[in-house]
Amino acid sequence: MRSANAETTAAVKKDLRIRPVSFGKRLWMQRQLMLMSVPMLLYIFLFNYFPLWGWITAFMNYNPAKPLFENEWVGMKNFVWLFSKPEFIGAIRNTFAMAAINLVFGFVFPILMALFLNEIRTMHFKRTVQTITYLPHFLSWVIVVGIAQTIFSSDGAVNKLLLSLGLVKAPVFFLGEGKYFWWLVGVINLWKECGWNTIIYLASMSAIDPALYEAADMDGAGRFKKMLHITLPGIKSTFLVLLVMNIGYLMEAGFEIQYLMGQNVVMDWSQTIDIFALKYGITKGQYSRAIAAGIFKSVVSIVLMLSANFTAKRLGEDTLL
Image (cartoon, rainbow, N blue to C red):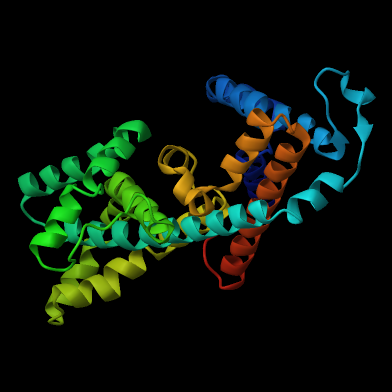
């Protein structure tokens, strides 16, 4: 009897045993999802990976009039030229400076705004503030730069406000002095993207267990202490993942705003690596040197992202890889 029961139990376990599903069968089971992802995969391959074969021209004295492999190979000569040119060193400085300002502004102020909106209980006012702050994200950079040039001009709203408050005795030439350019870029980027960047933090805050706030109320914690000890720790993982991603994009200080606002008088402060590559690649026809600048930018971005990811992993936090 016991033998029969044991055999029956073994048979049931065998039937209930989860069999591993092969990769091909899993693909077939999820074929709808796979088909939906095909256009995006093609887009990424065609516009992000396929053009990488052109990197070999950075190691040539490239002339588009000749067949590709008939051009003279020069090795690292173009990279040596880049780092011997003060203009490129200045472009690196400008790129890092504006990217760092954008990184700090792009994290501090959206988190503060998300905390502010999360504490608002009047839904009508909250939605109105959200709508107003999100709208600049959908404006093109041409419109944004036009507005900024009007506001920060010598007779613009900012100078009129400073003069009326007695903070300055004469209009400040914001658009024509290089020392203001980096901060102008940071402020304009903040105005355009701050409201949009709060969406992720608000979504992360909505996932925090309300019981934690109720327990804090019972302990007599005020709003500030709840924000400090519940809300901010609750969005820490989201913050770190976004920080790793944005450090990877640290070399992407921007192109449109610097190109549109970068007059000759502030060129030493406005020229980024992207503008340098455009100038030498399209205007001067020195394609190999422009591609070498792009390779340098890509390699540095990869190193920065991997370093930030490794640091977060060593600290025991959520990472991308």
